[in-house]
Structures are given as C-alpha cells and as structure tokens.
Image (cartoon, rainbow, N blue to C red; front, side, top):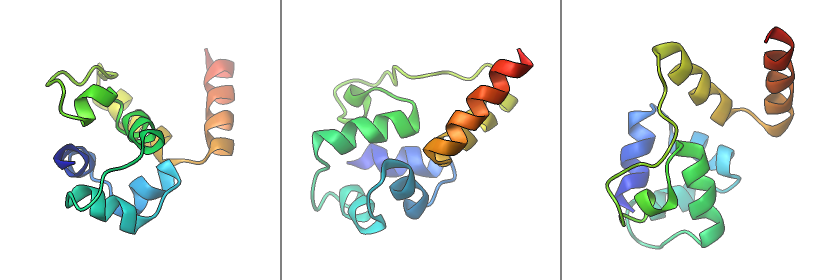
Length: 101
C-alpha cells in the first residue's frame, strides 16, 4: 500500500510510531509499505484514523483524502500529536480542551 508510506513520511512519522498508534508491529507496517502483504480491515481502519483519511483513500479507490483538514499549522501539529499519544493521554487532552473552551 503505497499510500501508507506516503502519508507516514508526510507526517514525519517512523514506522514504529505508526505501529504504536495502530497497535501493530513495525515489521507489519514495513511489509504493508513494501506491498508484501496487505493489512486486515481492522488495520486499514486504524491506519485511516491514524492518518486522518478515508479507508477508500488508503485503498487507492479515490484521490480525495476524505479526512480532517487543518485550518492552521497549530491545528495540524495538535492533530499529529493527538494521533501519537495513548488512550489515557487522549482522554486527558480532551478533558483539558473541554475545560479551556
């Protein structure tokens, strides 16, 4: 899946970072990027969530990402950070954001 590597490098993420976000292994991400094997549907959905795009975009069924589009550099950076933290961190960040707003 060529788009995995493309999206990963656009976001300055390592294979290990992607694997951690989607709860897989670095080796799995590597073989998907090389086209040796394909991710299961569970991981296609997890990858789409990680990269903020549609599963159709990942599967090259469309050229439209269908995902979130940041309005500013700050939003883009925040979204990238959010995607790389664990569930407990996400919960705490959302609670903080709700308190601030």
